[in-house]
Image 1 (cartoon, one colour):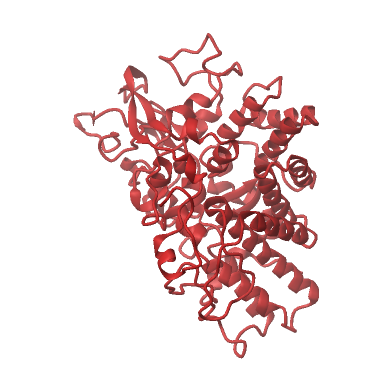
Image 2: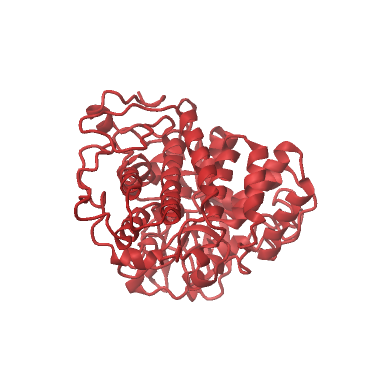
Length: 529
Protein backbone atom coordinates (compact mmCIF):
# COMPACT_ATOMS: atom_id res chain seq x y z
CA UNK A 1 0.00 0.00 0.00
CA UNK A 2 1.33 3.42 -0.91
CA UNK A 3 2.08 5.37 2.27
CA UNK A 4 0.25 8.69 2.46
CA UNK A 5 2.08 11.62 4.09
CA UNK A 6 0.49 12.11 7.49
CA UNK A 7 1.29 15.84 7.53
CA UNK A 8 -0.60 16.35 4.28
CA UNK A 9 -3.54 14.32 5.52
CA UNK A 10 -3.79 16.41 8.66
CA UNK A 11 -3.84 19.58 6.56
CA UNK A 12 -6.76 18.17 4.59
CA UNK A 13 -8.60 17.08 7.69
CA UNK A 14 -11.73 19.13 8.34
CA UNK A 15 -14.03 17.09 10.53
CA UNK A 16 -13.34 13.69 12.02
CA UNK A 17 -15.18 11.79 14.68
CA UNK A 18 -14.08 12.85 18.13
CA UNK A 19 -12.31 16.10 17.16
CA UNK A 20 -13.46 19.07 19.15
CA UNK A 21 -16.24 17.16 20.90
CA UNK A 22 -17.60 18.82 24.02
CA UNK A 23 -18.09 16.35 26.84
CA UNK A 24 -19.20 16.62 30.45
CA UNK A 25 -16.73 13.96 31.51
CA UNK A 26 -13.19 13.10 30.52
CA UNK A 27 -14.42 9.50 30.43
CA UNK A 28 -17.17 10.31 27.94
CA UNK A 29 -16.36 7.64 25.39
CA UNK A 30 -19.69 7.67 23.56
CA UNK A 31 -19.06 8.77 19.94
CA UNK A 32 -22.15 10.98 19.74
CA UNK A 33 -20.43 13.13 17.14
CA UNK A 34 -19.32 10.32 14.82
CA UNK A 35 -19.85 10.68 11.11
CA UNK A 36 -22.70 8.62 9.75
CA UNK A 37 -21.93 5.47 7.85
CA UNK A 38 -24.46 6.65 5.27
CA UNK A 39 -22.26 9.58 4.29
CA UNK A 40 -18.75 8.60 5.39
CA UNK A 41 -16.67 5.42 5.68
CA UNK A 42 -17.28 4.63 2.00
CA UNK A 43 -14.09 5.33 0.08
CA UNK A 44 -10.35 4.94 0.51
CA UNK A 45 -10.15 8.73 0.81
CA UNK A 46 -12.58 8.56 3.74
CA UNK A 47 -10.39 5.99 5.45
CA UNK A 48 -7.24 8.06 4.93
CA UNK A 49 -8.99 11.15 6.26
CA UNK A 50 -10.18 9.27 9.34
CA UNK A 51 -6.68 7.87 9.87
CA UNK A 52 -5.30 11.41 9.81
CA UNK A 53 -7.89 12.32 12.41
CA UNK A 54 -6.55 9.59 14.66
CA UNK A 55 -2.98 10.86 14.32
CA UNK A 56 -4.05 14.38 15.17
CA UNK A 57 -3.45 14.78 18.90
CA UNK A 58 -2.10 11.27 19.55
CA UNK A 59 0.68 12.83 21.62
CA UNK A 60 0.96 16.44 22.71
CA UNK A 61 4.56 17.25 21.92
CA UNK A 62 4.53 19.76 24.76
CA UNK A 63 4.28 16.86 27.21
CA UNK A 64 7.54 15.52 25.78
CA UNK A 65 9.30 18.88 25.95
CA UNK A 66 7.87 19.94 29.32
CA UNK A 67 7.51 16.54 30.99
CA UNK A 68 10.79 16.74 32.89
CA UNK A 69 9.38 19.73 34.82
CA UNK A 70 7.56 17.08 36.85
CA UNK A 71 10.94 15.76 37.99
CA UNK A 72 14.30 16.76 39.45
CA UNK A 73 15.53 17.81 35.99
CA UNK A 74 13.44 20.88 35.26
CA UNK A 75 10.97 23.39 36.68
CA UNK A 76 7.93 25.14 35.24
CA UNK A 77 7.04 28.47 36.83
CA UNK A 78 3.58 28.56 35.19
CA UNK A 79 0.97 26.75 37.26
CA UNK A 80 -1.48 26.92 34.35
CA UNK A 81 0.46 24.20 32.52
CA UNK A 82 0.25 21.80 35.46
CA UNK A 83 3.80 20.46 35.49
CA UNK A 84 4.89 22.47 38.53
CA UNK A 85 2.17 20.96 40.72
CA UNK A 86 3.29 17.42 39.94
CA UNK A 87 6.92 18.29 40.53
CA UNK A 88 6.45 19.90 43.93
CA UNK A 89 3.74 17.55 45.18
CA UNK A 90 0.86 20.07 45.24
CA UNK A 91 -1.12 18.26 42.53
CA UNK A 92 -4.66 17.56 43.69
CA UNK A 93 -7.99 16.20 42.40
CA UNK A 94 -8.98 19.82 41.72
CA UNK A 95 -5.98 20.87 39.59
CA UNK A 96 -4.84 17.68 37.86
CA UNK A 97 -6.70 18.32 34.58
CA UNK A 98 -3.95 20.46 33.10
CA UNK A 99 -0.73 19.49 31.37
CA UNK A 100 0.08 15.80 31.31
CA UNK A 101 -2.79 15.01 33.65
CA UNK A 102 -5.39 16.28 31.21
CA UNK A 103 -3.86 14.51 28.23
CA UNK A 104 -3.40 11.19 29.99
CA UNK A 105 -6.82 11.08 31.65
CA UNK A 106 -8.93 12.08 28.66
CA UNK A 107 -10.71 9.40 26.61
CA UNK A 108 -11.37 11.62 23.60
CA UNK A 109 -8.55 9.95 21.68
CA UNK A 110 -9.63 6.46 22.75
CA UNK A 111 -13.08 7.23 21.40
CA UNK A 112 -11.60 8.17 18.02
CA UNK A 113 -9.52 5.03 17.87
CA UNK A 114 -12.35 2.69 18.78
CA UNK A 115 -14.66 4.43 16.34
CA UNK A 116 -12.08 4.08 13.56
CA UNK A 117 -11.47 0.39 14.24
CA UNK A 118 -15.17 -0.43 14.24
CA UNK A 119 -16.00 1.50 11.08
CA UNK A 120 -13.09 0.53 8.88
CA UNK A 121 -13.65 -3.20 9.25
CA UNK A 122 -16.75 -3.44 6.97
CA UNK A 123 -15.38 -1.10 4.27
CA UNK A 124 -15.27 -2.79 0.86
CA UNK A 125 -13.05 -0.34 -1.05
CA UNK A 126 -10.00 -1.38 0.96
CA UNK A 127 -8.19 -4.67 0.62
CA UNK A 128 -7.70 -6.82 3.68
CA UNK A 129 -4.03 -5.89 3.80
CA UNK A 130 -4.81 -2.17 3.61
CA UNK A 131 -7.34 -2.41 6.44
CA UNK A 132 -5.01 -4.50 8.60
CA UNK A 133 -2.21 -1.96 8.18
CA UNK A 134 -4.41 1.02 9.03
CA UNK A 135 -5.90 -0.82 11.97
CA UNK A 136 -2.42 -1.72 13.24
CA UNK A 137 -1.40 1.94 13.18
CA UNK A 138 -4.47 2.98 15.15
CA UNK A 139 -4.04 0.10 17.59
CA UNK A 140 -0.55 1.45 18.30
CA UNK A 141 -1.97 4.91 18.98
CA UNK A 142 -4.52 3.38 21.33
CA UNK A 143 -1.84 1.30 23.10
CA UNK A 144 0.29 4.42 23.53
CA UNK A 145 -2.68 6.26 25.01
CA UNK A 146 -3.23 3.47 27.51
CA UNK A 147 0.48 3.50 28.31
CA UNK A 148 0.12 7.13 29.43
CA UNK A 149 -2.98 6.33 31.44
CA UNK A 150 -1.47 3.45 33.37
CA UNK A 151 1.81 5.30 33.95
CA UNK A 152 0.15 8.35 35.48
CA UNK A 153 -3.08 6.99 36.98
CA UNK A 154 -2.58 3.25 37.48
CA UNK A 155 -5.92 1.45 37.34
CA UNK A 156 -8.05 2.95 34.55
CA UNK A 157 -11.08 1.89 32.50
CA UNK A 158 -10.04 -0.35 29.60
CA UNK A 159 -12.45 0.45 26.79
CA UNK A 160 -11.89 -1.13 23.39
CA UNK A 161 -15.32 -0.59 21.80
CA UNK A 162 -17.81 2.23 21.69
CA UNK A 163 -20.12 1.91 24.68
CA UNK A 164 -23.84 2.61 25.01
CA UNK A 165 -25.16 5.92 26.40
CA UNK A 166 -25.31 6.13 30.17
CA UNK A 167 -22.71 3.46 30.87
CA UNK A 168 -20.29 4.49 33.62
CA UNK A 169 -17.01 2.58 33.27
CA UNK A 170 -15.08 1.14 36.20
CA UNK A 171 -11.32 0.97 36.60
CA UNK A 172 -9.45 -2.05 35.26
CA UNK A 173 -6.31 -3.12 37.09
CA UNK A 174 -2.95 -1.75 36.04
CA UNK A 175 -1.81 -5.31 35.35
CA UNK A 176 -4.73 -5.78 32.94
CA UNK A 177 -3.72 -2.61 31.12
CA UNK A 178 -0.09 -3.76 30.98
CA UNK A 179 -1.14 -7.08 29.47
CA UNK A 180 -3.41 -5.40 26.95
CA UNK A 181 -0.70 -2.98 25.80
CA UNK A 182 1.98 -5.66 25.45
CA UNK A 183 -0.34 -8.03 23.58
CA UNK A 184 -1.49 -5.31 21.20
CA UNK A 185 2.06 -4.21 20.45
CA UNK A 186 3.25 -7.75 19.83
CA UNK A 187 0.35 -8.50 17.48
CA UNK A 188 0.61 -5.32 15.42
CA UNK A 189 4.39 -5.67 15.15
CA UNK A 190 3.65 -8.64 12.88
CA UNK A 191 1.70 -6.37 10.52
CA UNK A 192 3.54 -3.05 10.51
CA UNK A 193 6.40 -2.47 8.04
CA UNK A 194 10.10 -2.25 8.84
CA UNK A 195 10.69 1.42 7.98
CA UNK A 196 11.99 4.55 9.64
CA UNK A 197 9.73 7.60 9.87
CA UNK A 198 11.20 9.07 6.69
CA UNK A 199 10.32 5.99 4.70
CA UNK A 200 6.89 5.65 6.31
CA UNK A 201 6.10 9.39 5.85
CA UNK A 202 5.26 9.69 9.51
CA UNK A 203 3.16 6.54 9.87
CA UNK A 204 3.68 4.17 12.77
CA UNK A 205 5.97 1.24 11.98
CA UNK A 206 7.10 -2.09 13.41
CA UNK A 207 10.02 -0.34 15.10
CA UNK A 208 7.67 1.99 16.98
CA UNK A 209 5.55 -0.93 18.22
CA UNK A 210 8.54 -2.90 19.49
CA UNK A 211 10.20 0.21 20.95
CA UNK A 212 7.12 1.09 23.01
CA UNK A 213 6.92 -2.57 24.04
CA UNK A 214 10.55 -2.41 25.19
CA UNK A 215 9.83 0.77 27.16
CA UNK A 216 6.99 -0.87 29.06
CA UNK A 217 8.87 -4.14 29.55
CA UNK A 218 11.77 -2.24 31.08
CA UNK A 219 9.43 -0.43 33.44
CA UNK A 220 7.80 -3.71 34.48
CA UNK A 221 11.16 -5.35 35.20
CA UNK A 222 10.77 -7.78 32.30
CA UNK A 223 14.44 -7.40 31.51
CA UNK A 224 15.01 -10.34 29.11
CA UNK A 225 11.96 -9.26 27.14
CA UNK A 226 13.13 -5.63 27.10
CA UNK A 227 16.51 -6.77 25.78
CA UNK A 228 14.85 -8.80 23.05
CA UNK A 229 12.46 -6.04 21.97
CA UNK A 230 15.05 -3.25 21.99
CA UNK A 231 17.60 -5.44 20.18
CA UNK A 232 15.01 -6.23 17.49
CA UNK A 233 14.57 -2.50 16.87
CA UNK A 234 18.32 -1.87 16.80
CA UNK A 235 18.91 -4.75 14.38
CA UNK A 236 16.28 -3.62 11.88
CA UNK A 237 18.95 -1.60 10.11
CA UNK A 238 16.65 1.30 9.22
CA UNK A 239 17.58 3.50 12.19
CA UNK A 240 20.89 5.21 12.83
CA UNK A 241 22.22 7.79 15.24
CA UNK A 242 22.09 11.31 13.88
CA UNK A 243 25.74 12.46 13.77
CA UNK A 244 25.26 15.73 15.70
CA UNK A 245 23.63 15.45 19.12
CA UNK A 246 22.64 19.10 19.42
CA UNK A 247 21.27 19.39 15.88
CA UNK A 248 19.35 16.12 16.25
CA UNK A 249 16.50 18.17 17.75
CA UNK A 250 16.48 20.95 15.15
CA UNK A 251 13.63 21.19 12.68
CA UNK A 252 16.09 21.81 9.85
CA UNK A 253 17.03 18.14 10.16
CA UNK A 254 13.51 16.70 10.18
CA UNK A 255 13.98 15.39 6.67
CA UNK A 256 17.25 13.60 7.38
CA UNK A 257 16.80 12.21 10.87
CA UNK A 258 16.94 8.41 10.84
CA UNK A 259 17.24 8.23 14.62
CA UNK A 260 13.56 8.99 15.15
CA UNK A 261 11.38 5.92 15.70
CA UNK A 262 8.08 7.67 16.42
CA UNK A 263 7.40 11.38 16.37
CA UNK A 264 4.77 14.09 16.40
CA UNK A 265 5.07 15.89 13.08
CA UNK A 266 4.26 19.60 12.87
CA UNK A 267 3.76 22.00 9.99
CA UNK A 268 3.36 25.77 9.84
CA UNK A 269 -0.19 27.14 10.19
CA UNK A 270 -2.02 23.84 9.86
CA UNK A 271 -0.56 21.69 12.66
CA UNK A 272 2.05 23.76 14.45
CA UNK A 273 3.32 23.85 18.02
CA UNK A 274 3.89 26.66 20.53
CA UNK A 275 7.04 25.17 22.05
CA UNK A 276 9.17 28.30 21.44
CA UNK A 277 6.58 30.44 23.22
CA UNK A 278 7.07 28.36 26.35
CA UNK A 279 10.78 27.64 26.10
CA UNK A 280 12.46 30.74 24.68
CA UNK A 281 14.15 33.22 27.06
CA UNK A 282 12.25 36.37 27.90
CA UNK A 283 14.35 38.66 25.72
CA UNK A 284 13.32 36.51 22.73
CA UNK A 285 9.63 36.81 23.61
CA UNK A 286 9.25 33.48 25.41
CA UNK A 287 7.89 32.59 28.83
CA UNK A 288 11.22 31.07 29.91
CA UNK A 289 9.27 28.08 31.22
CA UNK A 290 12.34 26.02 31.95
CA UNK A 291 14.40 25.99 35.10
CA UNK A 292 17.08 23.32 34.81
CA UNK A 293 18.18 22.00 38.19
CA UNK A 294 21.58 22.08 39.79
CA UNK A 295 21.47 18.28 40.08
CA UNK A 296 20.96 17.77 36.35
CA UNK A 297 23.91 20.05 35.53
CA UNK A 298 26.02 18.25 38.13
CA UNK A 299 25.10 14.86 36.63
CA UNK A 300 27.17 15.49 33.50
CA UNK A 301 30.62 13.96 33.78
CA UNK A 302 33.90 15.78 33.33
CA UNK A 303 35.85 15.33 30.13
CA UNK A 304 37.82 12.63 31.97
CA UNK A 305 34.72 10.46 32.20
CA UNK A 306 34.47 10.95 35.96
CA UNK A 307 31.73 12.54 38.03
CA UNK A 308 32.46 16.02 39.37
CA UNK A 309 32.86 14.47 42.83
CA UNK A 310 35.39 11.94 41.56
CA UNK A 311 37.55 14.17 39.36
CA UNK A 312 40.21 16.12 41.31
CA UNK A 313 40.66 18.37 38.26
CA UNK A 314 37.08 19.66 38.44
CA UNK A 315 37.06 23.37 39.30
CA UNK A 316 33.81 24.57 40.91
CA UNK A 317 34.73 28.14 39.97
CA UNK A 318 34.98 27.14 36.32
CA UNK A 319 32.23 24.50 36.41
CA UNK A 320 31.26 24.29 32.75
CA UNK A 321 34.69 23.73 31.28
CA UNK A 322 35.98 20.25 30.47
CA UNK A 323 32.60 18.57 30.81
CA UNK A 324 30.61 16.05 28.79
CA UNK A 325 29.82 18.08 25.62
CA UNK A 326 26.13 17.22 25.95
CA UNK A 327 25.88 19.64 28.89
CA UNK A 328 26.35 22.76 26.76
CA UNK A 329 24.30 21.22 23.94
CA UNK A 330 21.38 20.66 26.30
CA UNK A 331 21.41 23.53 28.79
CA UNK A 332 21.70 27.30 28.35
CA UNK A 333 24.15 28.02 31.17
CA UNK A 334 25.10 31.39 32.68
CA UNK A 335 27.65 32.99 30.40
CA UNK A 336 26.93 30.75 27.42
CA UNK A 337 26.34 32.10 23.92
CA UNK A 338 22.70 31.60 23.02
CA UNK A 339 20.90 33.15 20.06
CA UNK A 340 23.91 35.29 19.27
CA UNK A 341 24.33 36.94 22.67
CA UNK A 342 25.58 36.10 26.14
CA UNK A 343 22.90 34.49 28.25
CA UNK A 344 22.44 35.55 31.84
CA UNK A 345 19.50 35.31 34.18
CA UNK A 346 21.80 36.22 37.09
CA UNK A 347 22.27 39.92 36.31
CA UNK A 348 19.48 42.25 37.49
CA UNK A 349 20.57 44.81 34.93
CA UNK A 350 22.38 44.82 31.60
CA UNK A 351 23.97 48.05 30.36
CA UNK A 352 22.05 50.04 32.95
CA UNK A 353 18.64 48.67 31.93
CA UNK A 354 16.48 46.07 33.66
CA UNK A 355 17.28 42.56 32.45
CA UNK A 356 14.06 40.72 31.41
CA UNK A 357 15.92 37.39 31.76
CA UNK A 358 16.80 38.03 35.42
CA UNK A 359 15.52 35.10 37.47
CA UNK A 360 13.56 37.41 39.79
CA UNK A 361 11.97 39.16 36.80
CA UNK A 362 10.57 37.18 33.86
CA UNK A 363 13.51 34.87 33.30
CA UNK A 364 14.12 31.24 34.16
CA UNK A 365 13.61 30.83 37.89
CA UNK A 366 16.67 28.58 37.98
CA UNK A 367 18.73 30.93 35.75
CA UNK A 368 19.53 28.02 33.41
CA UNK A 369 17.28 26.73 30.65
CA UNK A 370 16.82 23.81 28.31
CA UNK A 371 18.17 24.33 24.78
CA UNK A 372 16.73 21.28 23.06
CA UNK A 373 14.31 21.87 20.16
CA UNK A 374 15.26 25.56 19.83
CA UNK A 375 17.39 26.26 16.77
CA UNK A 376 19.21 29.55 16.24
CA UNK A 377 17.01 30.52 13.29
CA UNK A 378 13.74 30.87 15.23
CA UNK A 379 11.89 34.06 14.29
CA UNK A 380 9.52 35.98 16.57
CA UNK A 381 6.57 35.09 14.35
CA UNK A 382 7.28 31.40 14.94
CA UNK A 383 6.82 31.43 18.71
CA UNK A 384 3.25 30.15 18.40
CA UNK A 385 3.56 28.70 14.91
CA UNK A 386 6.52 26.34 14.94
CA UNK A 387 7.16 23.29 12.79
CA UNK A 388 9.74 21.19 14.64
CA UNK A 389 8.95 17.48 14.80
CA UNK A 390 9.06 16.14 18.36
CA UNK A 391 10.52 12.68 18.80
CA UNK A 392 8.49 10.45 21.10
CA UNK A 393 10.87 7.50 20.78
CA UNK A 394 14.37 7.49 19.31
CA UNK A 395 17.13 4.96 18.75
CA UNK A 396 19.26 6.18 21.65
CA UNK A 397 16.53 5.11 24.06
CA UNK A 398 16.74 1.57 22.69
CA UNK A 399 20.49 1.47 23.31
CA UNK A 400 19.91 2.62 26.88
CA UNK A 401 17.02 0.21 27.40
CA UNK A 402 19.21 -2.68 26.30
CA UNK A 403 22.06 -1.50 28.52
CA UNK A 404 19.89 -1.19 31.63
CA UNK A 405 18.31 -4.59 31.09
CA UNK A 406 21.76 -6.10 30.49
CA UNK A 407 23.03 -4.72 33.80
CA UNK A 408 19.98 -6.05 35.62
CA UNK A 409 20.34 -9.53 34.12
CA UNK A 410 24.14 -9.65 33.99
CA UNK A 411 23.88 -10.71 30.35
CA UNK A 412 25.70 -9.40 27.27
CA UNK A 413 27.44 -6.60 29.16
CA UNK A 414 30.06 -6.03 26.45
CA UNK A 415 27.43 -5.31 23.81
CA UNK A 416 25.58 -3.05 26.24
CA UNK A 417 28.76 -1.07 26.94
CA UNK A 418 29.33 -0.72 23.19
CA UNK A 419 25.85 0.78 22.87
CA UNK A 420 26.56 3.27 25.66
CA UNK A 421 29.82 4.27 24.02
CA UNK A 422 28.13 4.85 20.67
CA UNK A 423 26.11 7.58 22.36
CA UNK A 424 29.12 9.07 24.11
CA UNK A 425 31.19 9.02 20.93
CA UNK A 426 28.42 10.74 18.96
CA UNK A 427 28.59 13.63 21.44
CA UNK A 428 32.40 13.73 21.47
CA UNK A 429 32.69 12.31 25.00
CA UNK A 430 35.29 9.79 26.18
CA UNK A 431 34.30 6.11 26.21
CA UNK A 432 33.27 4.39 29.40
CA UNK A 433 35.33 1.35 30.37
CA UNK A 434 33.06 -0.46 32.81
CA UNK A 435 29.31 -0.93 32.69
CA UNK A 436 27.63 -0.32 36.03
CA UNK A 437 24.11 0.45 37.16
CA UNK A 438 25.23 3.94 38.20
CA UNK A 439 26.74 4.60 34.76
CA UNK A 440 23.62 3.45 32.92
CA UNK A 441 21.33 5.58 35.07
CA UNK A 442 23.55 8.64 34.70
CA UNK A 443 23.88 8.11 30.97
CA UNK A 444 20.13 7.76 30.62
CA UNK A 445 19.57 10.97 32.57
CA UNK A 446 21.92 13.12 30.50
CA UNK A 447 21.31 11.60 27.06
CA UNK A 448 17.51 11.79 27.39
CA UNK A 449 17.38 14.98 29.47
CA UNK A 450 14.30 17.16 28.84
CA UNK A 451 12.62 14.53 26.66
CA UNK A 452 9.83 13.62 29.10
CA UNK A 453 11.16 10.23 30.25
CA UNK A 454 12.70 11.10 33.62
CA UNK A 455 9.40 10.68 35.49
CA UNK A 456 9.18 7.05 34.41
CA UNK A 457 12.78 6.48 35.47
CA UNK A 458 12.29 7.97 38.93
CA UNK A 459 9.17 5.86 39.36
CA UNK A 460 10.86 2.68 38.10
CA UNK A 461 13.91 3.14 40.34
CA UNK A 462 11.86 4.50 43.27
CA UNK A 463 14.05 7.58 43.62
CA UNK A 464 11.24 9.90 44.70
CA UNK A 465 12.19 10.15 48.38
CA UNK A 466 15.75 11.09 47.42
CA UNK A 467 15.29 13.37 44.41
CA UNK A 468 11.73 14.75 44.66
CA UNK A 469 11.72 15.87 48.29
CA UNK A 470 13.20 19.02 49.78
CA UNK A 471 14.79 22.08 48.17
CA UNK A 472 15.03 22.40 44.38
CA UNK A 473 18.10 24.46 43.46
CA UNK A 474 19.02 26.15 40.24
CA UNK A 475 22.21 27.94 39.27
CA UNK A 476 24.85 29.13 41.67
CA UNK A 477 24.51 32.83 42.31
CA UNK A 478 26.89 35.19 40.56
CA UNK A 479 27.28 37.81 37.88
CA UNK A 480 28.01 37.43 34.17
CA UNK A 481 30.29 39.67 32.11
CA UNK A 482 27.98 40.33 29.17
CA UNK A 483 30.92 40.93 26.84
CA UNK A 484 33.13 37.94 27.59
CA UNK A 485 30.67 35.52 29.20
CA UNK A 486 32.95 35.09 32.20
CA UNK A 487 31.04 34.39 35.40
CA UNK A 488 32.07 35.72 38.78
CA UNK A 489 30.54 33.25 41.16
CA UNK A 490 29.09 34.18 44.52
CA UNK A 491 27.97 32.13 47.48
CA UNK A 492 24.97 29.82 47.47
CA UNK A 493 22.51 28.59 44.87
CA UNK A 494 19.12 29.85 43.75
CA UNK A 495 16.39 28.19 45.79
CA UNK A 496 13.61 27.74 43.26
CA UNK A 497 11.11 26.00 45.56
CA UNK A 498 10.72 23.45 48.30
CA UNK A 499 9.15 20.19 47.26
CA UNK A 500 7.24 17.48 49.10
CA UNK A 501 7.17 13.87 47.99
CA UNK A 502 4.31 11.66 49.19
CA UNK A 503 5.27 7.96 49.11
CA UNK A 504 1.68 6.84 49.70
CA UNK A 505 0.73 8.13 46.26
CA UNK A 506 3.06 5.63 44.61
CA UNK A 507 3.91 8.17 41.88
CA UNK A 508 0.31 8.26 40.64
CA UNK A 509 -1.68 11.38 39.86
CA UNK A 510 -5.11 11.88 41.45
CA UNK A 511 -8.36 10.99 39.74
CA UNK A 512 -10.02 14.35 38.95
CA UNK A 513 -12.72 15.33 41.42
CA UNK A 514 -14.96 16.26 38.52
CA UNK A 515 -14.85 12.64 37.37
CA UNK A 516 -15.58 11.26 40.81
CA UNK A 517 -18.58 13.59 41.02
CA UNK A 518 -20.24 12.18 37.89
CA UNK A 519 -19.09 8.55 37.97
CA UNK A 520 -19.70 6.58 41.19
CA UNK A 521 -17.76 3.64 39.70
CA UNK A 522 -14.50 5.61 39.84
CA UNK A 523 -12.37 5.58 42.98
CA UNK A 524 -9.58 7.86 44.15
CA UNK A 525 -5.91 6.90 44.11
CA UNK A 526 -4.18 6.50 47.50
CA UNK A 527 -2.74 9.58 49.16
CA UNK A 528 -5.29 12.09 47.88
CA UNK A 529 -8.10 11.71 50.43
